[in-house]
Length: 219
Image 1 (spheres, one colour):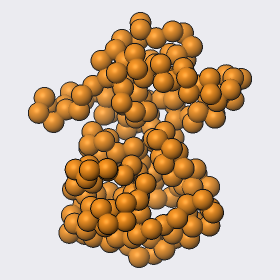
Image 2: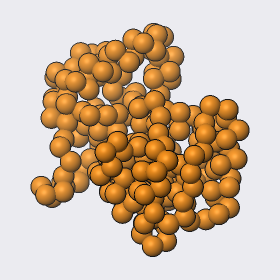
Image 3: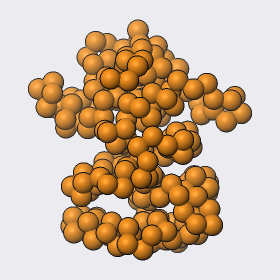
Image 4: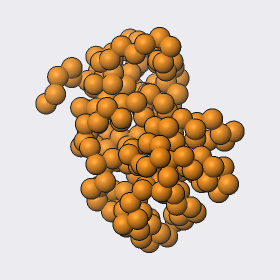
C-alpha cells in the first residue's frame, strides 16, 4: 500500500513496484487520517508511508497502523536524510525508512526485505540516524522496551554478523562478505537477537550502537 500526498510520487512508486512482478500495489492513500482505515480494508503486507502528509503526518498514521489487530510492516518514506521524524518512526516500530531518491532496484529490494520481515534502514543514513536514536535517552513513558543483553553474551561470529547488519547489509550481503551460506547468517542472527532480547533487525542495530559494537562518532 502506498501512502503519499503527492500524486506524481505515488504514480512513480506504483510503476516501479508493479513492474517487479512479485509485488502488487493493493491500495493508495493521500491522507494520513485515512491510512489505517484503508490498511484495515485491504490488509497489505507492507505500507510505504510518507513522513509528511496532509491532514495528519506519517507518524500519526503509523501510530494508528500499530493498533490494528494484524498491523502491516511499515517502511517510512522521506526526502530528508537526517530527520527527527525518522527517529520517532523507529521508536514507534517502523521496519525502517527509505529516501525518496532511492534507486528503483533498491526500492524493490527494500520492499521485498520488509515483506520478508528483515526490516531495513537506508544505507546512506543508517549510521547517522540510528546512532543519534541510540544516543538519546528516551523518557520512560515513551521508551520502547530496549534490547537488554550485553555484547559479552554473543559469540565472536554472532557479534561480527550484528556489526555487518548495523552497517546496513542484507543477509545475502553478509553471507557474501563472510563466505558462508545465507542460512548460516540467519541462524547466527536469530541466536544473537534472542540473546540480546531484540524483537527485530532495527532494534538489533540500535542495540549494536548502544553497546559499543559500532563507532560512536560519524565517519
